[in-house]
Image (tube, rainbow, N blue to C red; front, side):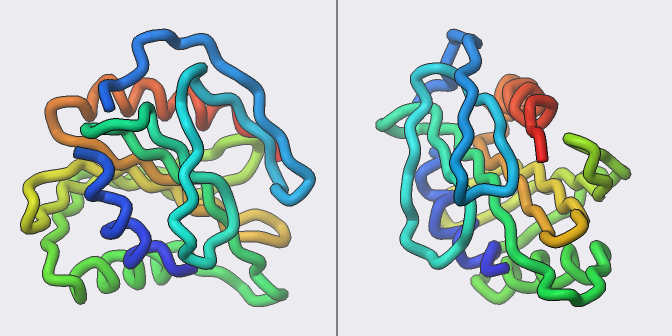
Length: 169
């Protein structure tokens, strides 16, 4: 899963006001192993980064809340979420950014168990906050991510929780 490179490339987009309307729109696609709902007015974005999933912005102009719902086939291999997070954090550090773990907890969404972490990220453009959930499904590993500025993070995290709670595998 090529999350760190993608995360940092897309982090620049995170610096469109958070959508105030919280009407959720259901989204499903036969290419995805899950469905979910997202706030009306949000827009999809394609980072052309060879990941599988959906990336959404809260609007078309900066600053914007970024949500990514990504997945990768486990290909029959066993997945260790602690190792996935180590790889994620190491990938970010190789870009010159600094990352600080703020919290970690077990979390399940849509019946898939996983681990959720919150981070403070420092890049040359400034500060970001991240919330990342890795889920260990039967056939896939999931990486659902929120990126936003520290000032907007609390509201963005509440919206992200609504999205996560709507996920159905």
